[in-house]
Image (cartoon, rainbow, N blue to C red):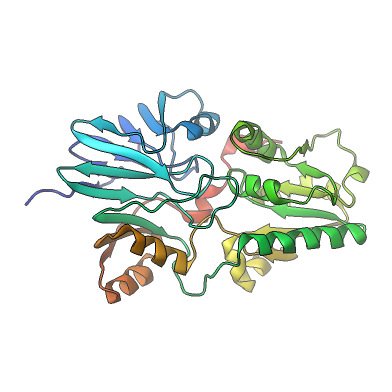
Length: 339
């Protein structure tokens, strides 16, 4: 019996025929990287391959690395195995990795979402025999509102805070969520200020997306400048001395976890907006169906519950242990915490 085209081992997802790894979590010789979040693009590999638009992102996060960029749908062959990258819709530069060998096709999604967000290239379903999927939000309780409705709520919240003489502080991960927030904030309400980690990453991303002007917060920024305006900051800034300059302020978090009221209370957030860069329950199911895959491997999230449901639907579904972390893996790296 032939070994599977992709196997899970102690270093990551391994294609033996090509001697290449996909999003490995331990140092390897050759790594194909789906996107720039810290749990998927790690330091220490000898050679990196990723989408062109992800190259400046992972260089910013990892420093000097040997990396080559590929275009969407560009086929590149390693030891007779055909690889190509396809939009995952998760964040800027995020890819699904298609692997084909001897007529067999596997697709590894990394992380993905099926709703276009106006920043990332929208997700495209890819036909395959085996589909490796995340299920960060793989519970029926997770059902997203359309993005336009969420941003209407966010901008109304900002407007009300302005009328109340308060600063609006909204938290989102420095890569992905922050740029999505910036893209859709209504700048007619006021000025957008950014934490240094957000601004540093946004500077990298600006050539790749339409993002409004922002003002970096520095030690010289005066307290009275914030009143009525909005501040976009990473979650790590909440409760830090840095935020005291914004008093009086109101806080909000933009995350899929805001579905649960308890998550907002635990984080001591005034307002939660349900906005995720991952699929909800129905999005996962629709995406899997569109691939035509018979076999599905669930890698991170609510893997047991979701794979069990897929088996009830008739899929050959199972789980695999990885070091991918879903939204918690989207935190800024140490160097990005600097302001």
